[in-house]
Length: 149
Figure 1 (cartoon, rainbow, N blue to C red):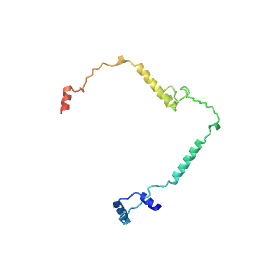
Figure 2 (figure 1 turned 90 degrees about the vertical axis):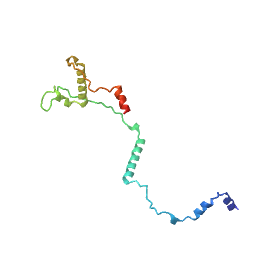
Figure 3 (figure 1 turned 180 degrees about the vertical axis):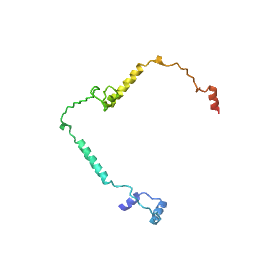
Figure 4 (figure 1 turned 45 degrees about the horizontal axis):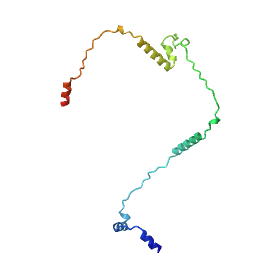
């Protein structure tokens, strides 16, 4: 009696679909080759992942209370122009002394020299010139004619 009740509760299948399902034959299917699309990781990949996991674990377990207090003292000694000489043996009063200085210091000196040159510039030494405009702008009529063309 319970088998009849469950058959009655099942949904009804359309007769056309039922005939197609009953008439199905595997011989009608096309032959295809299956290809494996998922690749397994290489030995290097596994080693890299293990190394990364170990590193992350060490970072997570790091205890900063085990560190010791240190004091840092920076000592920067720049060469003085009086004490330096170039390979030729000349005094450091000319440009070869700059080769012993850091590039930042050389750039700063160049910037200062440029600023001093601008501030001390004397415009009275310039010649008077007449400006002749050779490339004139088109008139409204010319622009309108080009738009129409």
